[in-house]
Length: 469
Ligand SMILES: [Zn+2]
Image (tube, rainbow, N blue to C red; front, top):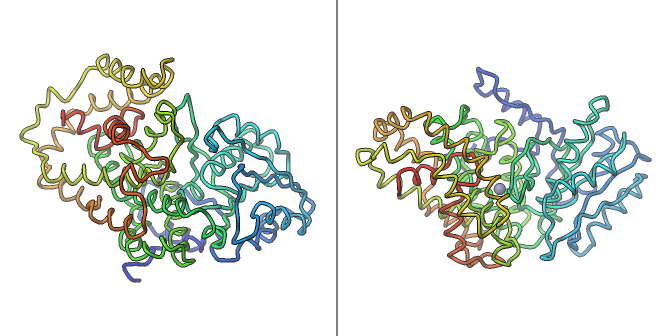
C-alpha cells in the first residue's frame, strides 16, 4: 500500500467489515457497519433496480423518492426524471416527495419534513433519498424513526443516491437536524445501500464538490479537539481507529486536489471514497468527534446567525474548509506558544451564572425570544460542569504538556500550510469572503470566537477561552 492509498475501499463493504474486525477493540466499543453495499462508478445509477431487488424490494413494490426543488442533471439528462423512469421501467410503483425550499432556495433539516416523509411510508415501501446533505439527513432520519415506531416490521429499505460530493452524511448513522434553530447531531441509521454515480457527482455544481473537500479537511483539526476533550476529562471515550481508517488522508487529498477541482471522474471517485470513509469513521465510534470539532461549531454558528445578517446559508463544507484553516492556525499558535507555567488556575474556572448571562447576551440580538440561547446553554452547561469537576486533569495536562501532550497533539492536527495547499490546489474557498454568499470578517470572527458556546463538545476554543486567551 502506498501513502496515497486509503486503508480500505468503502466500495468493498465486506473488506471494510474485515478491516474493522481486525482492529484492537478489547472493550468492544466499536459499532458494526450496517450497510449492505456501496457502489462507486460512472454508471452505477443504472444498478438501482438490482440494488432494490438485492435488498428484497421486488418489482411492483412501492418506492418513495425524496428530492428537493433544485433542478439536477446527470450530464445533459434531467436526473430526477431519469431516476423516476428507471424505477417505472423496472416495474416499481414510485411516488415523489418534494421538500420545499425557503426564501433563499434552501431546504432546512426540520423535524416537520421528517414527519412529512413518515406519512408516506407504509409496510414494504422502500425509501430513496436523491439529493445532497439536507435531503439525506431528512430521509435518513425518517427511515430511523419509522424503524423505531415499527419494531415488529423488517428494517425499512433506505437507498441513498448522493447528488453531490458535498458532505460526509451519506454513510453516517447520524443526522444533523435543527432544534430551536440550533443544529444538533442525533443518532439515526445507516442506509441499506449507497449508489455513488460519478456521472451524477461530476455534474453537480463545482462549489458542492469543493465543499465536500472542505468537509473532509475537518479531520485535520477535529482529532486534536477530541484528544484534548479526552485527556481533560470532557469525554469518556477516545479511539484512534477512525484515525487509522482515514490514514494518509492529507497525502491522498493533496495528490488528488487538482483533479477534484477539475471534476475528473478520478478526482470525484477519490473524494467520494474520502467522504464515505469519514461517515463510516464517525459511525463506528457513534459520535461525530473524529471529523467535527472547532471548525464545525464555527460553521454551525455561521448558519445560526445567517438570518440575522439577512443572508442565505453558504455551503456547509465550504464553511468547514475555511473554518478548518482558521482552526489549524489556532492550533499552530497554541502548540508554539502555550506555556503551562503561566497558567493562572483559579482564573480558569468561571462561575455558571456568569457564563449563563454571557451566552444569553451573545445570542440576544440574534434571537430575542431567548430560545436559541436557552438551547445553547442547556448543552454548554454540561460541559462547564465537567470542566469544573476535572480540575485535577487540567493540572496534570499542564505538568505533562512538554513530555507528552504537545507532541501528541502536533501529530493529530495538520499545519495550516497543508490545509491551505489542499484547498487552494482544488480552487476551494480559503477566506470567508470567498464563500457564496460572501460572509463578513465580523460574522466569521464572531463564529470562531463563540462557536464553542453552542454545544457540549469540548474544542480547543473552550480551552483558549478558559485560559483567557
Ligand atoms: Zn460536516
